[in-house]
Amino acid sequence: MITFLTGLLLLILGAAVYGRICVRVFVPDDRKTPAERLLDGVDYVPMKQWKNCLIQLLNIAGTGPIFGPIQGILFGPIAFVTIPIGCVLGGAFHDYMSGMISIREDGAQMPSLIQKYLGKITCVFYNLFVFLLLILVGAVFIYTPGDLFVTQILKSDGSTSDLAVWLVYGAIFIYYIIAMLFPIDKIIGSVYPVFGGILLLSALGVFAGIFVKGYPLDEIWEIGVLNVHPQGLHFIPVFFVTVACGIVSGFHATQSTLVSRTMRQEREGRMTFYNMMVIEGFIAMVWAAAAMGAINQGLADTSTSTTAMVGIVANDLLGRIGGIIAVAGIIVLPITTGDTALRSLRLMAADALHIDQSKRPKRLLTALVIFILVAALLVFSRLNADGFQVLWRYFAWANQVLAVFTFAMIAVYMKKKEKPYGMALLPGMFYMFVVSSFILNAQIGFGLSWTVSYILAGALSMLYAGGIMHMGKGCQPKSSAAR
Image 1: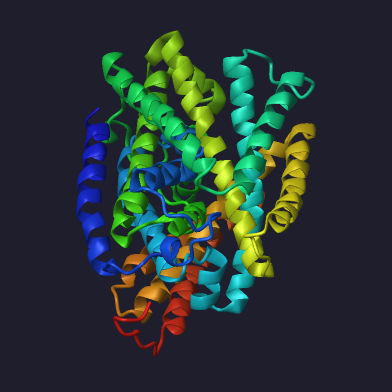
Image 2: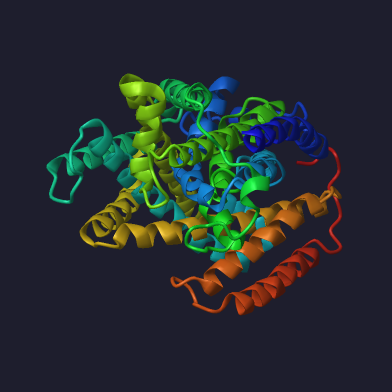
């Protein structure tokens, strides 16, 4: 329990200190935001800070901060230290800077920012990854909440032949279409406060239950730091790919840039972007602890599926009614991520193809193409035995690849502005090493030995740093009056 509580203290104090540093480095001011200057009643819509905070939190908190930590805790209590440090120095900084840079660039989405600061060729590769990832997010975040609802709420078997599964998928699909097409303040801005309340209530309930039930948690000095995973998986890089959403997630930048179009003041950025990621880090810590406690109590073991673990923890800590509320909160998470993921994809596709999204027919046409692709992936994942596992593995890896691009964009931006770009360069290099070594070794990648994978990943990380230095070389900062 001491390691867990120390991790929570690191998260809170670290966020208080480093969050303030991030604000001082960026220097938000009183200039008009894109929501005011470019108001269109659809995507550029000024909204209150508390609504933007809930939207951002629910956008970024899919099943990742729950499913990821449940799997990641198998690496031992080192997770209680790694999650808060990574969240404060990497993830929250990543989300804050991408959102604030977008505000300064008229609410530009990530592909536009990548092209401006990293060049057209880099942008082509980024677009390939981001379009693929967001379509995967749409499919995965219909699949996972649908299955949770059917198995944990309806108590059905959730098999492919189960009609209830397809009916629930259809209901989520219809909601996504509505949320994707209507003005952001009419649907998303209206239902998210309710969803946000359920999310926070379930997370706080599980947190309290850990202490009330007296779940035994391992200490880092008792278990050790590395090589404790039951399958012998390497802490670096596997842990950092597994626990993406609680530490660093490239997907989050696509959501920060979406919310940048509804911000009324730049000074709201720390609460909206940085602190909401810190709350996600807290959710990740809570579920990691709950899973460890359940295993140590003998309620589950290391082979228990992630979905089953959610039900076990929720019912044991909160009882039947509380367990239903907690599971409902988990179902809400992916739904409220999938809708804005597809909305972001619509905006990015429209920006890339120069399609005016203020006209409803053009929004509908753009959305139709996206939903056909999502539906195809959803059917594939259901009709193939290993279909979903394949999608999930590529989803997790591609998610972190996007973070590598985002850190590079932030580093070049900061170098141009004569700011301490090492704040972005160092985590970017680390995640370049993570994604490179993972795909070089993994069976879904090149299948090389760990020694060779680490050597090549180290070389690629150095090339990554050199590329950023070259892109920012000789850049002159803009005047303080310029955006």
